Image (cartoon, rainbow, N blue to C red; front, side, top):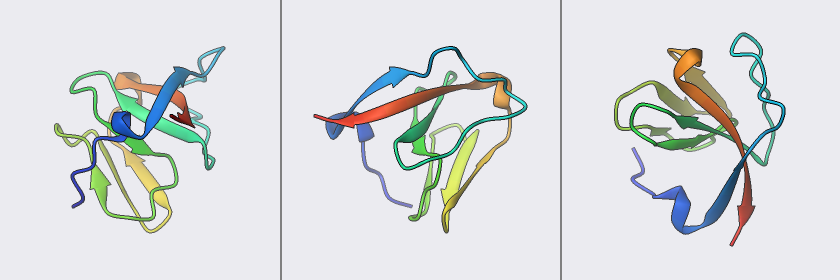
Length: 79
């Protein structure tokens, strides 16, 4: 698992209006932020990545969200 702090590379802004937890969007600039541990994982993660508590995990172009209610959808912009 890669331990990269995404906040060092990107600024994150909440997607407005917040999408439904039942229908989370995906895309190259869409990221999921765990509201429990504050970890950030790409919505289309091509490398093995996860947040510290395990709510978000990604690999092979997909990301799995265990509890969508504890997930904030954000848009990432390079610093």
